[in-house]
Length: 74
Image (tube, rainbow, N blue to C red; front, side, top):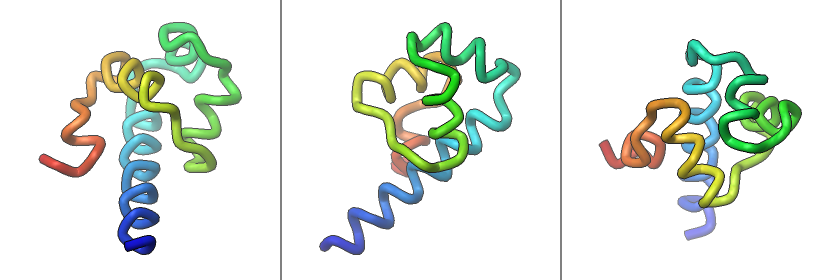
């Protein structure tokens, strides 16, 4: 079971990173709209951290990314 959780977390990191990299918004704009630091957005972009669920929900809205896509359900 642990491997599955780690695999899911890694896939979420990859999808979030891709969404940040391909966004028309700058890291600064994303950070401002979400209410987090640029460094935190950079951690997500570089797949070093996962956001909390509330932050993830806001990121999905800001990045125009469905939670289903992010979670790999679509």
